[in-house]
Length: 335
Image (cartoon, helix red, strand yellow):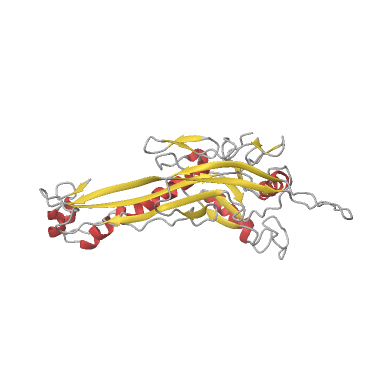
């Protein structure tokens, strides 16, 4: 898009305007949530990287006198490969806009395109969770994105497979209830009973993150149960809230969106818990969002038009190898 007097005449009028595209970027809530592990990708190291689960048996075995110790069972779980891709956006500003506009601070905000790449990263990360019931989805660019985990199932499934045994595990709370005290206890029971290693052994993996959409009722209900000094259901004051300090509540507003970033009300009640320590979700950053700025006389200036071209560039991959570290409820009451 080119910014010029004909399509943005308010820039050269003596009028106060607010251009929303120039506002500060949204907070990087998903990137900083603890759900995804950061993995910087060095230059000249290729465009793919493989991640694999490796489990060792949980318990030592008896050793008889002078007997040889048993060898530990080691099982390599499922693997998943991340492939880098880049995002970009350009904008042009005419000579007349630069020389005649009366609000340079507005143009300065407008040309801060780094926010657009950061927002796209937040959207892509959020969609790994929000579209987690599927193995693929079609993104805003029309690209089919593989979001399956290592066992080739969706991130959220009732039959995740184990490499070292014939058993399976689930990470979807039965009947997908909305958040409440009872459903939180149900989710914690799911953690206790369905957090397994590749040999089917129970893992005592601390799930310390409670994540949700920005649905006001869900957010407020979670806050009541996590922050109150007494149980919300208690009739007497001074009753200890057993959930106080147990979880970090992370609000992820872009989970409840479609591929284009528009509101998807079907996902409004989405919530779950996850383990930051056990996360098998990786964000490989090869190119942090950066602004390409023009200057008079360089290649950022169009010779014939005198327009200046600004651009943002970034590159990353997102890959989730396994699913035993995260549990979810869609909050829609489906069986």
